[in-house]
Image 1 (cartoon, protein in one colour):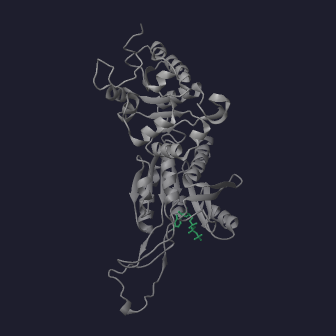
Image 2: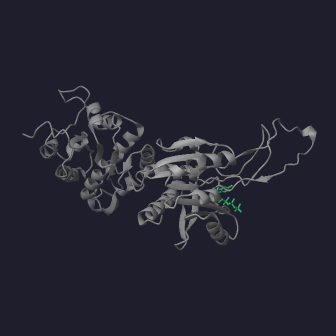
Image 3: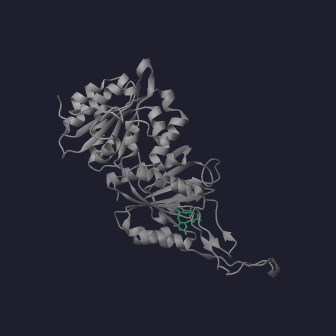
Length: 410
Ligand code: CTP
């Protein structure tokens, strides 16, 4: 009979198993994790037991596979104990139903209760038919979970149960076991531990207590960059001038600093410059400001003459003060001669990557929920990023940043 008390000192993996045909592959993941020296507690949903017997997991884990919140005579609160003792929770396979239960915060069985009760990293490995995988409900639930910091190992494209083929096949068990091992060692994604500073939103220059000069930036692209960077493992600070509730939408781990004017934005960004590895200037910072009148300008006093004065260019100051190992990403909002203007801006601003927006294209740039951009860099040919969600564009930009860091471009 296997021992009930595995090695106390070895890292502990809670291996969740949900009810899908790929449940049998969780056995292989368990075997590999045990070979790597981890203590593994298998936690099966009721439906998982229809596919693979708990005894199979018990025998390989060297400890009893758990199925219920109520079947452990040693403790009335097994979920808390499991959640607190876990170094990582990995769920193989993760079904559409489990994804929905987790997104809703349900705790109606031992696995969901354990995931709610843990502060350990959680890795979901979904597997399902392509039709289910591509459902907006499934993808939206996954986005919610990712925003909360849950990691997702995307399914592969390949043969599925029933003879079909397409995206939805469980990732390779060897890959799942290897990623789990890396997570135990501190890996949180391609930007693991990288300190990223993102500026976002359109700044507002006060004319008087009532009126402002601003621009059409919503902050959505910058906020998406902050959220996706956090998902990729970065430690993110978002300096935002957005007055929309999109600020509330950023990942929970993102530190949010709210600013209003160009000068507040400048100060907030430059104050934090030394303590970041990557700076992404997505903010639409006012180029001109006005002296602020203490009191509301009255109509009776006639049409006011506003004398605009230039604001400092924050990127130019970053250029002067940056460390050689920092990566600086700028944005360019253009409405004509887009590539020519942006190429000149790339040089003028001294950035490592310029994300170029043609603001005249419908479904891109300011106010839109989607975006379509070109990436310019001093060393590579331009890359067009097709129209997609601002989170999708953020992923493209940040993947490029991760590659630049890996290559040691900076
Ligand atoms: N930017 C900045 N400080 C400013 C204005 C802009 O740091 N005072 C940054 C933006 O955050 C962006 C980049 O510079 O990353 C380009 O902004 P954009 O508005 O496209 O260009 P401008 O520098 O304002 O030049 P122009 O208005 O002539 O296009």
